[in-house]
Length: 181
Figure 1: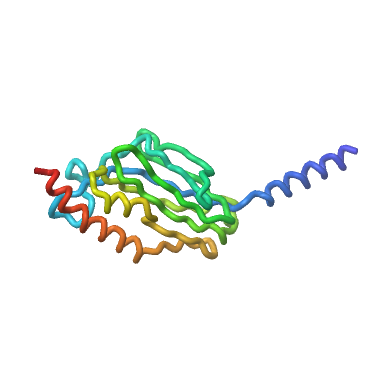
Figure 2: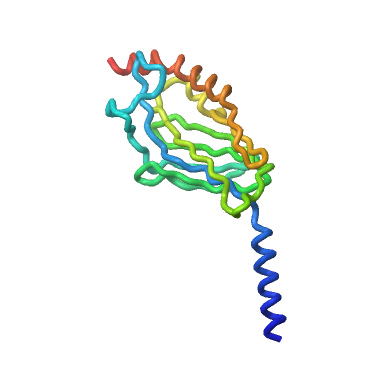
């Protein structure tokens, strides 16, 4: 009888392990981006290689417009979310006083790693202080970055991200320059 119970428990545990869905760990640090008039991108807040981490940023995860999880960044700016196979997610970073940033993560074809661990996707996020400009506000409501997973390889749409960043900076630079005065 003990052998039968042991076999049943082992069979259940093996089934439960195999029934788990593959996961993608999307994580990094959220930092404040500073834009100065003559720069082509964000610069550190203190002029050195470090930037100011932002805590208490809401990290909201949506599937087909429905909120499925939410978390906040830690004091050191760290965030992390687990995304499961079988869906396309919108991960939205939001905090009052900053422009939001959205990433679309297509995990429909995510497979288990050989060792059973989650596929890792490190991504540091930079958020700009919000300024009163309807065009910039509209831009930041659209996806900034898009990533898909095929054969457990991350494929970022780098061209779209470059275009999005360039357009944002073209509009934002004169506004931030005027605010510096």
